[in-house]
Length: 417
Image (cartoon, rainbow, N blue to C red; front, side):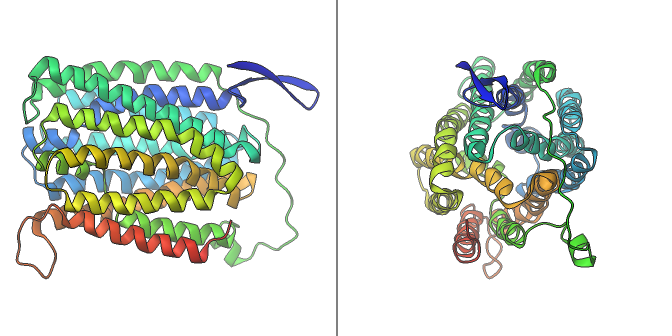
């Protein structure tokens, strides 16, 4: 739906009632996620079934890649504020991820997989904060929930298309086999590279928005203000709560491993992920619009409550069909909380600090994924510390549910709208 909306004296084109930047950035994310989901969704099964590594090593790979790349999230967000430009860094990040994906075709050791995963996540780190700041800069405060909801929806529909495409490839190459083969995975890499390359050309349609001059502060910039980047106390409290939540929110690789652990073949797991992404994408925009009207806090808390129940469900599941239901509700959590949390960050900080704030937000999530994934991998392989060493696939999910519940309490008590 394309129509015109009068802003100041100029009639500016809008798409879905928003600045075109939001739609085109969403289209970039759509195509990139088609690519990434085809190549990386089944990576834990490639590591486990083809390369024969342990769950502890899988946790290490996912955690190190995300945590190390988090430095680039913080740096690129700060740099985009200093330069006053977001688009160039965003392109650089997407380009780096696209350049290293073909190397997965020849990956034969977990060290090589770690290197590719690290570079891919580095690209994500470079692009994420400037991209989110670019979205926030392109809309008014009353449109943030809708804008981030639309972006999340397009991103997630891309993931769904990618997973459906992966399911077709798996069906054609290996049918309903329980384990993933190398030949199947190589086909996924070859096909998955194509949409990532196409995505880079979409940037021709994205314009750097004019930004208001940064207001001159009358408050001296002392040591404390430098240490806190001049950001509001509420933002730092929210960041601490996000750390607590993420500590129990290990890589989604463990959800895939749990699904296989309960007897689901590769093709069925892909279809479960299609369900997850469909629910996630369908709810993202309505949840964002609702947060513009009711407030972000209520929507995030509801999402975290559902997450807690879902992780308890993954811990207690005993038959394969239950995983279908859990993946569906996991999509509800993401649809409610992911885009709204990003909009909430923009509510807490001034415009000239958005790049830095998004860098810190995504950075703390990425850094925390290292201990989170290592803890999950250890608990899966060895169980709780007070138990005799024994495999316990339920333990990481009990731990995640506990952390999410504690984060909910902290958010409810300490952070106001």
